[in-house]
Amino acid sequence: MRALIFGVGGQDGSYLAKFLLSKGYDVIGSSRDAEISQFSNLKKLGIFEKVKKVSISINDYESVSNAIYVYQPDEIYNLAGQSSVSLSFEQPLESIESIVKATLIILNAIRSTGKLIKFYSAGSSECFGNTNSLPADENTRFNPCSPYGISKASSYWLVKSFRSTYQQYACTGILFNHESPLRPKRFVTKKIVQTVLKIKNGSENKLYLGNLDTKRDWGWAPEYVEAIWLMLQQNIPEDFVIATGKSYSLFDFTKKVFQYFSLDWQNFVVIDKSFIRPNDINDSLANPALAKEKLGWSARVNFDELIVRLCEQALSNNNS
Image (cartoon, rainbow, N blue to C red; front, top):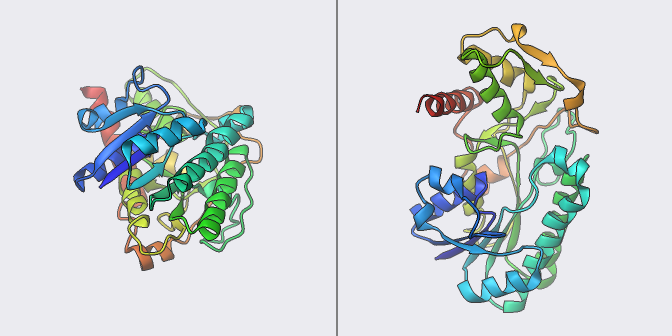
């Protein structure tokens, strides 16, 4: 089997590449400019030499179409595009082009081959907006609150349309928050762990955060990519919500990280309103029952273990 991963250098792309390699796949991973990209995550996972790295612009039909023709993938995973909710407010057009336009280009490029190429599109819990303490599943109405969420919702409908109209094997994974040591520094979970570690070491005095009451369903990214793969192994393509099914507040996350490092959060946390997003989602909760029923997948790493893993890895990196 051969897989083409758009966005192989990101958190999910790197873990997915490692997972597929363990399954015996040939893995081709793309970047806009593979010659200058560092692919640091692939190096951290020890798979840099095992992935064929190629340059592809996902906003250019000819570039995508040519790559599919040359590499003849059995499966395509689109994990590229802007991944920051907060940045999408500052650069909304970038969100639309890198997510919606790219999805349309890939779908059309696959269709033009006339071959069965299974396609996975990365969705997001941001499609649902606030769930108001009601767990969202595959039938829950979308109510996105950000340009990022709107872009992901639009891509979802494109995938659904091509699946029903052209009988393409295409599906969307609506993944709720999933963390790992590979998260970029701009993500709040990474910021919290790194800053608290610096406080422990005496190089930082305060941790500045926004709304501590906001709730998220946090999972462990390395096991979420298994669910992504399982979606393309089904006889009939279908969209799935992937999550733990349990929601915790940012305060819960912050407090437990401080506890791990034997510190009292009250002495260090400062609320900074500039970190509060416009139309921020206060409550995000999921019902991943369909994934358990049809994919045989459920999250194994719980909230407490997730935090321990993130803190242990940060401490290990700091000491190395």
